[in-house]
Amino acid sequence: MAQDQAKRAAAEAALEYVEEDAVVGVGTGSTVDWFIDALADMRNRIRGAVSSSEKSTERLRSHGIDVLDLNSTGRLPLYVDGADEANRFLQLIKGGGGALTREKIVASASDRFVCVADEGKLVDVLGAFPLPVEVIPMARSTVARELVRLGGRPELREGFTTDNGNLILDVYGLSITEPLKLEQSLNNIPGVVTNGIFALRPADLLLLGGESGVRRLT
Ligand code: 5RP
Image 1: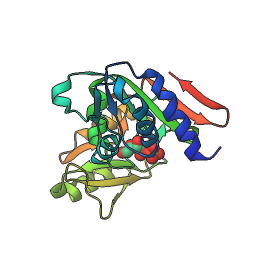
Image 2: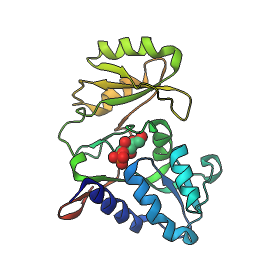
Image 3: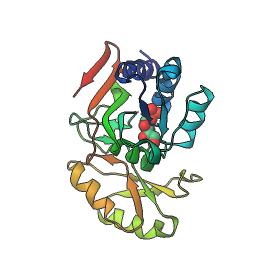
């Protein structure tokens, strides 16, 4: 099965967790694009969506789905998003699309986080995928030096500005054996807005598309 079809199968399987009349939290990425397209068929049965990026907002609106402000919705019953890597504890690396900060905010405001991905995203140890870290521009160098001290090789994502007006450092060479600890340490570096480890708020359910259908991990 092609990777894209695996992503699509996982994304469409997430539809069954969407409740009638609810506001749905929506992530970012090519897998989520499939989810948004599928959600369009339900647009008259949901109140709307809270979006994690300008890109997803545009796609939601193009389908006629209302995009609501998180400040006006309160907690959400469901957040659906993809991942760059996931382990068996449903801890994730996210931010390949650069939307990690808003993704983490919406995930933390949601009662259930359903992560949708192709099965190639499941790994034993997080870190082969370079870890995205969103950084305030003036702190780029100081944060980069601290990341080197922690054993990583940060590289500036060239020509990229986040929806929040910040930069992304992609950190290579980390073997993330203690995701919770590293997520907290990185959060403590002045100038770091967010890092792409989702361990403090992992997924609650992982839907993995592959050759034999969609696997559910909890
Ligand atoms: C964006 C993300 C995406 O969820 C992640 O990059 C996975 O993307 P895709 O579904 O295209 O494989 O974290 O910031």
